[in-house]
Amino acid sequence: MPHAMPPPTRDIVVVHSSDVHVDHEYTARLHGGDGTAGLAGVLSAARGAGADAVVLAGDTFDCHRLPTDLLDRAAAVIAAAALPVVVLPGNHDPAVADAVYHHGALAGVENLHVLGVKHDEAVVFAELGLEIWGRPHRDYGDMIPFEKVRPRSTRWQ
Image 1: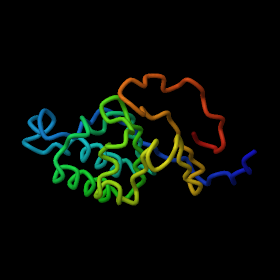
Image 2: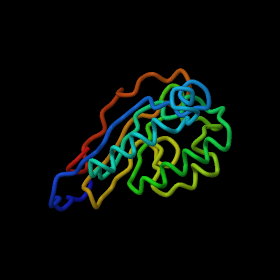
Image 3: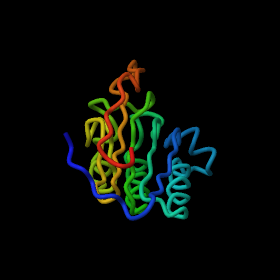
Image 4: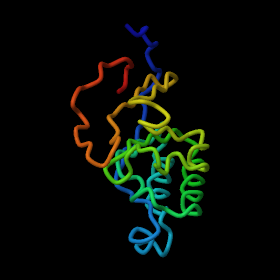
């Protein structure tokens, strides 16, 4: 049984988004050639809202076949957010062996937490009394994200 966490001294702000579809084609065309613009917009809004963490729940990337320079830009955008970013891989970007999350630049981003890659199904931010959990897509046919609910171990989940 997990030990009791001291009660937080304040409420926390978690920004949640999904389907930003970082890419070099469709999303990039919508944003004047910048396939990271949707991601950057979400992270900018999160900083503006004073977020303690961001959850990107599925399809952060449109696919795993993206150019290195785009992945480098996405890594820089996430690192510049300077707050925890938790990615739950979706059906477009599952946690497979050749996933973009294993790419050098993305793999090295300290504030990026990818469920199914860096963490199994949960990441705990003890200083916030927060656990973020989810069942990542682990292949392209995996479609049962809430088969079993994880027991609570922190004040916020």
